[in-house]
Image 1 (cartoon, rainbow, N blue to C red):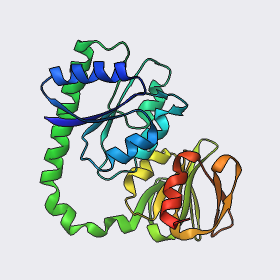
Image 2 (image 1 turned 90 degrees about the vertical axis):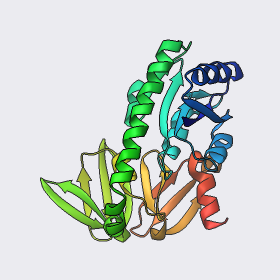
Image 3 (image 1 turned 180 degrees about the vertical axis):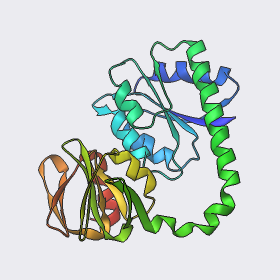
Length: 248
């Protein structure tokens, strides 16, 4: 039995999916939400295994919520449950485990449940077998391993100023270096678990310790002035987290 959270702004769609998931006898519905903020506040207070997420949420995008979920530790699995098939590629870039279409078919939902069961069981097995190893390697996250010109470079995390997506490539800027890399931004977000490295925009992660100024911008957003003078945008999705961290 694993715990699921459903995010959809349509009550009937939530009820239908919850009914089908319960019929599998493998899923407990731990909660439901209809917007990004209400859902995120609940999810952070629960131990959720998987989130079933619609993409069109009134005036919001479920993709924005998925990006914020990627920063949670532990991170729940994500299944997109939507009427729109054009977002499938983006969904899998966000490490979604499955993508199911409305109207929901019970056989398709059961396939997703079986896939989830295998993934979660494998995760549990890996966690159990690597527990002792993790205890002896707690300091591994002090450096970030990146591949540069067929070399593996170890970057001290405390030296990172920001990581961004620029012209289709991921760029890591440190106190002294600038690296252009082929892996997507989400790869490095998943590797970095330090509280000081956070996402502030779909295209940027920043080191909170390297921010020297926060400038108000249009529509309740902000620009961050970093230690190197670079100006990094903060999207509305991440504004609340920034305010809470710096208490302003």
